[in-house]
Length: 147
Image (cartoon, rainbow, N blue to C red; front, side, top):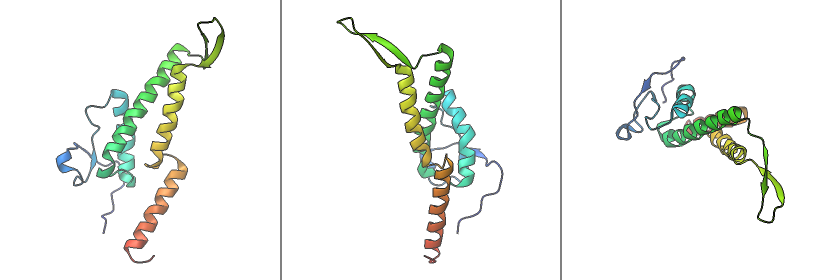
């Protein structure tokens, strides 16, 4: 039977591949993440760990999520700092001009969508949270032989 976690923020411990699957507390942010990605880890990991949505098996996926989230946050700051226009004009060799999406805006939009999809597996939106709760409930019932 799974031991119920205490409420409040869980303690943070260092992660090591040697102890993967055996640590009982939320791991610290990996050293190789950027400062922005570490902020995401430190903000979300304890909550996800406490909810049971972050386990040792999810470590690499969550690390990727934090890396990408940190990068998207940096892009957001750069867009705000530069006042990047959504569309820019490009002149081809023949001299005609066409409008295209600004590359930094395009990158931001694409990565934001990827980030939203990745976040679903950790319950980072209301619908995904409900789905994860339903899956956990079903799994618990199945283990207990009720389903």
